Image 1 (cartoon, rainbow, N blue to C red):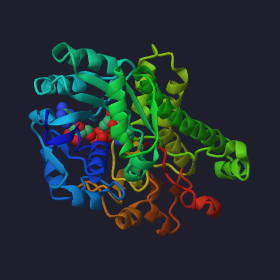
Image 2 (image 1 turned 30 degrees about the vertical axis):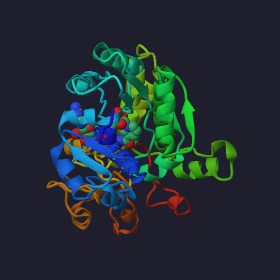
Image 3 (image 1 turned 60 degrees about the vertical axis):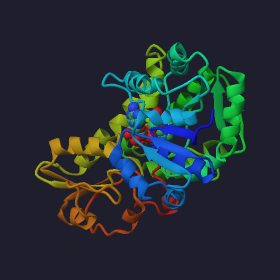
Length: 405
Ligand SMILES: NC(=O)c1ccc[n+]([C@@H]2O[C@H](COP(=O)([O-])OP(=O)(O)OC[C@H]3O[C@@H](n4cnc5c(N)ncnc54)[C@H](O)[C@@H]3O)[C@@H](O)[C@H]2O)c1
């Protein structure tokens, strides 16, 4: 069957859907984005990125209207051979994975699918979901083939990493796996084929492992600071020219849209026996409270104006989703008289310019270590800087503020 598009990316207006759609379109494939967020699509159609993603906008400008198109009507999925699903997969208020959003999306598009299409599930999903999707879609289209190819890029580095990271490909049908491998080979040379059950765990293990690594650094930070010792002196001694601690992360807010929820997805599907994951959650989510406790050692926050610099979940990002800076703000609102917030990349009516926040605050907290903050003058105001953004010269250059995905 001849179709106007090669690929339809469902959720292609999102943080990982859009770079993927742009990357495929840049390879000359005909790509259509199907997304329910019309405002985002309107922006994309003008060649503008709705969020920061290094190097993506110039390519978007080149491909939009040529090999990349957008729309908010579900019948678009009928027009492409490969249907890539990249909608959000959040956990609910009880930290359980939710299948509702995915289920509704699949129900909505079912009538437009047919037996000759290949579905490429790319959202991060709980174990067993690929099989569930396969079963659901096959009820109406017995010939349809479902694959699972997890997205593993670091937000902000998608355009580079889509070309450099190996792509995991899995599926229930051998020919579909071959076809989808060939599709991804247009982006990256290395393809790793495993089973869907294994691929689901490969993705969740990776994110949970990162989350646990950050928790280890954060726990050590808390132990050292609790004892009145300077963690970064210890960190330097541990890691300098010592191969066994190479890659040991620095402390900082481990947050963002993926690490926490994927650790919880894994936990929920291991009958809540993922003790390491839960411990990591307690440590990472407890860091804002700990920093406030450190600040209160120096002075009572009652009656003070406090400022938070950096509300994104990591440095040089405009993504505030699941950022621990917002948790810090909530906690500080209980302790202090007033809490002022600023961010280099997120515009909100309740945020102020950084200079004003510094001028009006009695004490400052670094929420996300955006590069520019390193060059600001804070006078003699105390700065709570878990990232060590300002303190140790020797470590400054390596601060990445990357404790998130
Ligand atoms: N953000 C990351 O760095 C990252 C990295 C790897 C994997 N992932 C995974 O990728 C998935 C998507 O994450 P994201 O950060 O891009 O989310 P996102 O919220 O930025 O994007 C999701 C997009 O899907 C659209 N959408 C929602 N329901 C839809 C529907 N029924 N039909 C069409 N469009 C719909 C939304 O409008 C949105 O534009 C998640 O499973 C996430 O865990 C994210």
